[in-house]
Image 1 (spheres, helix red, strand yellow):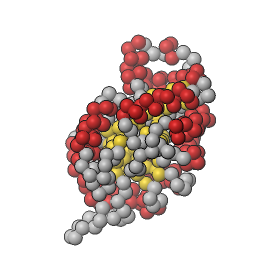
Image 2: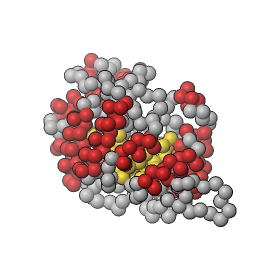
Image 3: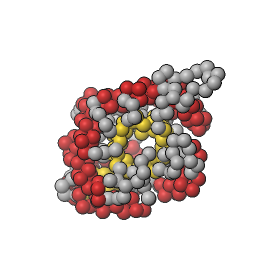
Image 4: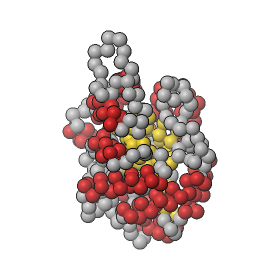
Length: 335
C-alpha cells in the first residue's frame, strides 16, 4: 500500500478559535489513524491568526496522546528559531512518552516575518548556521560520547528520526549529504520540485538512519463526491493564497461560488502557480492526478495538505483519499 501522510496546519476557520482548530486537529488525526494514514505532521508558524500550531511540540504531544499507532511529528520545526538543545529535549521527551512514533522534520525558514523573528529573540542570520545546527541536534539525539559535557535529558541515545524539509536545492543537497529523508514543500512552492529531487537522489550518501534516498513531496488534495463540490471547497485555499499577495493574512475563509470575482488576473496567476501541485475533484479525478504525479516524481510517499473550511468536508476529503490509496502507486520501503 502506497504510504500517504497528512500535513495539518491546524487551520483556524473564520468565526472559530484556535481551541476549535486544535480540537479539530486531534479529531482529524484520530480519523487518519483509523483510515491507515502513515504519519500526521504539524508545522511551526508564528503570528498567523489562521494557524494554531505555533507551539508545535506541544500540539504534537496532544495529538500523539490522543492516538495510538500513527506516527506524529513536525513538518516542520524551524530550527533557526531554536537552540538545538531545546529541540533535542522537546523531541526526546516526546519520543520517551510515545516511543517509535515521533518524527522531527527540520526547516531553515523562520516560518514568520522579520518582525516576529525579532520577537522570538533570534538573530535574522541564524539560518546561515542551519547545517551545523542540524548536526548538533543529531549529535544530541545520538549516543553519549566520551567526555560529552552537555546532553539532552531526555534525548540522548533516542535517535529520533530526522527529516530535512525544503523548497529549494539547498535542502536537497543537505539531505543528500547527511543521508536523511527529504520532504519537499511542493504544496505551496512547487517550482524547483523536479530539480531538487534529481539533486537529492544523485548526491545521496547512505547514513546510519537511511540507506537510500527517500523523498516525500507535499501536495494539496481537495476531494469530494463531485468535481463541482471539490472545486467549490478549493476556493478557500485559493482565497488564502490570494490574500498572501495582498498582505492580508487572516483566518481561513469560507468557500465562494465564483473565485474569478475574488482575484485579479495577476493574483490568479500567482496563486495558481503556488497551488500547481493541487489535486481537486471527485474520487476518480483525484486518483488519476495523483497517479500521474507519483509517476512523474517517483515519490516514495506523499504528504497531503487540505485547507478546507468545513471540518466535516475536510474529513470527507481525507476519507475519499484513503479509499483510493491502494490504487495510486506501488509500495516503497519506509523511512
